[in-house]
Each structure stands twice: as structure tokens, then as C-alpha cells.
Image (cartoon, rainbow, N blue to C red; front, side, top):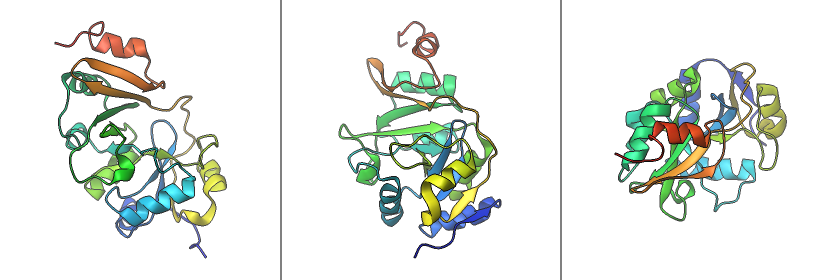
Length: 209
């Protein structure tokens, strides 16, 4: 039987849970997410099972700051650096060429891994205290609405997640925008909170210096 879910407010307890292979529901600037240690294969397997997520669909990450975020990449295209400066912390997930060592569950078929820096203080602190990025998938089973309250997350996930961090009612109407960057610029993978016009303006009408 799964352990009874517990709601806690101490970040150190949540970090200890992540280090022991447990999952943590936490607030972001968009919706509630599920954090796992991205280098714990048992935790990732648990995460995919609870979500009912296609194993071929990689999960993005949230990092404490831009430096930590860009360290996941084998290389960082110029467009990615400019957009990171413009929108991080914020609801922009950038898919970058993954450096070696990341589990396959986080890396797409083209070798990319998604990451963003959340402006939410709890999301930032959770990653900072863990010392590495955390997974950023929404706290709901696949096909359900993303959770804007802890109650929604608990009703969706049940007792299969042990640790929940309260963040109040989240007011986002859209998920993070997901883009992939290369030497030519960017392409939108998922429309979201940051519009294409925002991206174009940040890059100077789409050009790369």
C-alpha cells in the first residue's frame, strides 16, 4: 500500500523526500508540478507510472537559476541565450542539446532536453536546495486538467504521491511555452504563456546577432 500523503511546509523535508526517491507536488508560476530527482531512475519510473505518461514523451526540468539551467546543455545556441536572458525566470521552456549523463526519460528523440527557470520562490528553492534541476511535469494524470490548487492535485494523484507543498491558488491560464533552439533560431513546440510575438520582439524580429 502507498504511504499516506502528508502535506508539509518545510523545504528541507521536501528535499529529503526527493533524495530518498519520493515525489513532491509543488507550486510553479503556471500550475502545480511534480518534482522528482532527475537522476533517480526509480523516481522517474514512479513518476511516469503515476502520471500514466507515454514513456516516449520526455519530461522537462525546472532549475534554480539560469546558470544551473544552461549547464544541462551540451551547447547553448545564441538564440537560446538571448531568450533565456529575456524571459527567465519565467514561463519559457527551452529545449537544448542534452549533455551526456541524463536519463533517457528526459531526452527527446532529437537529443534535446527541456528546461526553464521558474519565478516561483518555492520551485526555485526546491531546486536550489537539491543542488540540481527538478522535474517539471504538471501534477495531474495524463489527459486531466492541470492543477491550480493543491486540492486538485491530490484528487488527481491520490496517495501515490507522499509529499505536497502548499502554494495557494495558482492563477495561470496557460502552461509554459516550449521552444527548441538551434543556430538558425527557434521553433515553437507548444504554445503557452509567452507568445510568438514576445519571442520575436526579444530576438529583434527573429534575427540572431
